[in-house]
Length: 164
Image (cartoon, rainbow, N blue to C red; front, side, top):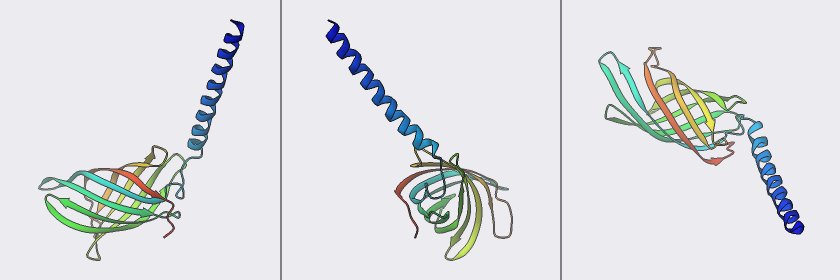
């Protein structure tokens, strides 16, 4: 009886020790925080929301991919629909990433090589830097006219570490 109890206790201690080790490794990885290098890679995303014009609210939806390098440079290709009008766009910009896995994207959006708008987008990386959530802070036309928007983004990392 004592022998079985000793084995059971030893097994229990081994399992608890293993679980604590796994938890410590996961916590240590999370404690490293985020940086432009740790979120670099190729991402896929969608965004949906509304542009608020003087004539009323207009729905907007976009799907695309982007590459962010380890220095925070950003380049995207996206297809978007605004009120049913389709366009292909390219986006360039810079991303700053904070240790707490929040960040900001300053984006320039082009159609056929012409700047059509700029945006400031607030970012949050989660799921161990494999997922992105974001919301537009602002959007503007090239002449500086503010475009009131309510747009959110959902993104998923497709691959890591780009220095292209």
